[in-house]
Image (cartoon, rainbow, N blue to C red; front, top):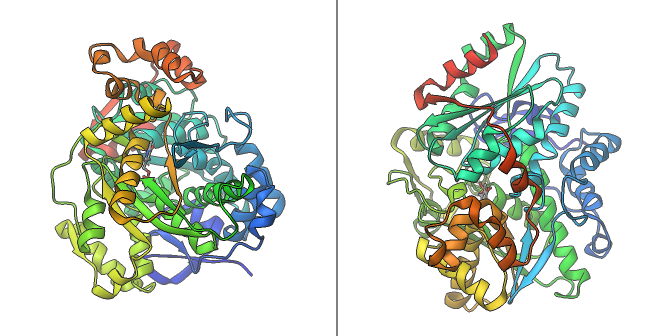
Length: 495
Ligand SMILES: *Cc1c(COP(=O)(O)O)cnc(C)c1O
């Protein structure tokens, strides 16, 4: 039996997993969700001994039921290979009494690689299965890390083109350099004059534009998405939570069935939603702790039941979390509305029109799996510094937000369950912020001059991704106003 998917704004029309991956976003602007969350059909005992790739197969095959075993294994093995600098793909590191699940060992040294190294394979397989003959144009909006990971994943993949929009001035220097030096004939990178939410809204509008769809179809193109609105991004992210639990068990850090809490540094709500899905699959996860930076729209939502994006957009040292419209929250809202697409559509309409909505008391009751927390810039710096001083471990700014919130939660709640922190980026990606947090004396130094120093104090090797950008040539210089994204896409595609 195939597990089917429907839009969060219309539960009537069902599509297969491969069709949902191909489309990215539903025609009505909703996000694809599975009809139900499947249970794991292997035991934790069996999972204990499995490699990352084997675990990925066990998890993903439950969701992507119209992929054959051969197809799925091929996608998995093509993604999780020597592009990662460790055979275990996602290592667990114990830092004090917190377990860091390091998700930054892929090609672009942020956790987006976990899903974006497999998405191109899932997408091209899905295209073949559905006899798609048009060239697939991937549109992505990025707050810094998705863009590079998607570019790296799709570069020179036959039958695809990729166009990435990022907010000019809203990403770190290293993130920007990683993108603008991207090779591949099919890649384009555009800096927009606006913030991430402008970029994301612009991309979503293009997906929903029927006239544009027809115009592109005549020219032989169809759009798809590499953002975490694509279910093909979300499903691979469930894998590492299952894997982490099994490894904790294998290493005898926990006993069979013991619940752990999970803290996730959150922006678009994709990563933490994957942890929620892992819990629903049967992984003994207790509380899901949603960690925000000073753009704490999600913290307020969990606190009050009101989602309100009408506030100042703050540029922080954790730019990949500088987001006021967390797209994937829609999938949770749909779930807590009792899979009521109409109710969800109504709330999302309010968000679009007024920038806010309030969920019902019944819906709030179903949020019990989550708590929200946030860390200020000072708290984030403090977490980086004290963790380094006490344990010699250097965290990036995003992970530090989560570590800080995790510690706050423990202190305030007295919840003594063991805690896993999703460690989402390498400190080498945000060197200047990280080093300055450790010691103010680095404040006046140039980012690139601190690379060797970070390597020295952390005792870690400089990642390949960083060595590469030091010498790479800039290939992309295009900029546009936030209101002119569609024209820019047409220009790039020559339509
Ligand atoms: C994207 C990103 C996040 C936020 O993840 P979401 O799935 O958007 O919530 C956190 N940290 C880093 C380093 C990221 O790149």
